[in-house]
Image (cartoon, rainbow, N blue to C red; front, side):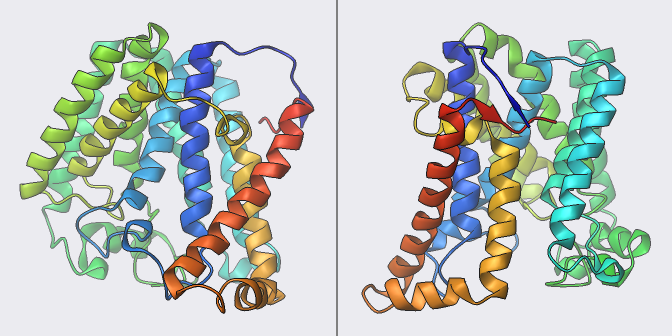
Length: 337
């Protein structure tokens, strides 16, 4: 952890605001008062289709691509940073018991680390034309591979079969043990999400709101149209999902650059790793020691209808982390890898 004193530009503030919004949204949807009472937009789609919650993770990876291009590193630095992010994900998965025999190998941070490494190394060497070709090859190739099997039920897909072939059951996502939403094969199209972020970076640098909006709108329409043949699906990270979510991210980023204020979300945006790791560890401890269910039942459940009570707990959780990160922001303390 180190203290930074460099003043960021308005453009970077807009990007930090957008990134902070995605981090805050991630904390919100990951920490309801109870999983049995959640408003539909705050749930992931059951399988095919999408909700606003399904936009959060690809938005973050899209931003990873932009920041990769804005602050390029040498290959050794790229690999070091990516591996450290993966390590943080493994440690968070193991926390607090560190039972390695049942440690889940995959996860959100692991996917971010791998996607960052591959996308950054490609961006370091490849031209824009080559990156476009790589994205097209990934998306069409992934479509072809998944078309070799059914797209449902979840455990029957080609992606699920690859997960089970490469990862022992004890180390898969514990909610299923037959497939993993951050599995091996579905991480490949996630790389394309970050590379699309790399491709729009010149427009971000130039604050070209028009191009971000137009390209984003075209991608949204294209993704929805492609979804007729290859359904939009977050868990599979389908090619239509990549195009659709990248377009939505581009349009929202354009809005942020044009008009939306960076604050208060910037405090999440400049400390995303600390926010994710800290909130994840805290949520586990609250559950283990029964503090979360006790607090929810004492202060929220008796006074509000179930879905609202669950949402208010989640908002209180986000507010707590906002205050923590605000203190660190004012002291110019950020967790960097």
